[in-house]
Length: 173
Image (tube, rainbow, N blue to C red; front, side, top):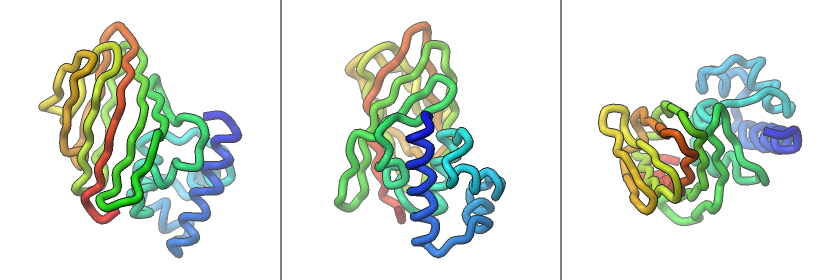
């Protein structure tokens, strides 16, 4: 993440935390991160993982997209880049993302908020995605939908994979 993106994320995260009436300690403890790390993140420092951003969004009781929507760039780590394309304004909340995954990547994602459903449509490359014990091998044009409120996985082969992800939040977010 470049410095401008980190600064924007930090300011937005701080504003959302304060709007919810949460202290740094409360949000950090709920998200399972150190208070000092959250403080650095709010100051535009650090290098948050996707899972950290997801946990912060869950603790703020907002969709992931609500936390990252002011960012002009993508967020990512270790060969996985995610960019918010659009965020629905209706109920249930629906977010659409573009995701690019480097060759040889095996990413295990933490469970999202209760009731969250994820659909992945592969654009290029090959990808194995879904629940840990029930991942589906996708070819371009194929899709898989699964309950993302359980740990899930994304695995690529020898080529980059590009996909569209739709996340539907039917729970309390």
